[in-house]
Image (cartoon, rainbow, N blue to C red; front, side):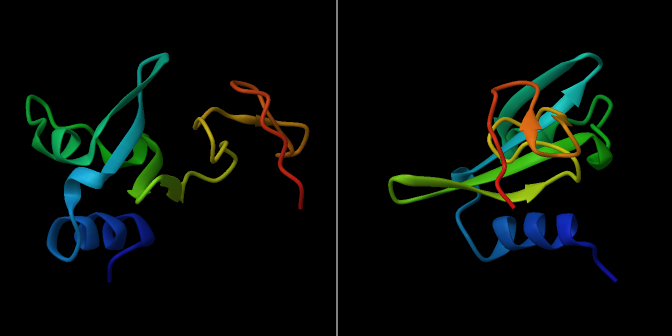
Length: 96
């Protein structure tokens, strides 16, 4: 059975335009952003999928998150503070 992340990647590859998807993933102490296609093509060594913090898709003029790692900001992918209400990276405030 596929998880949510695998479903999103499969949908992007086979049912949608993969070029519209961007991935934010952890590389040691940095967050790196690239296209989903680039992320999937990296093979020396391949990047483990558990390092993905955020996947965004562009729909017309709008960009929306389709996957956000638990406890991370849907705006920039950084860890959230204050029991998940304020972003450490961009100051984004999540209103429940």
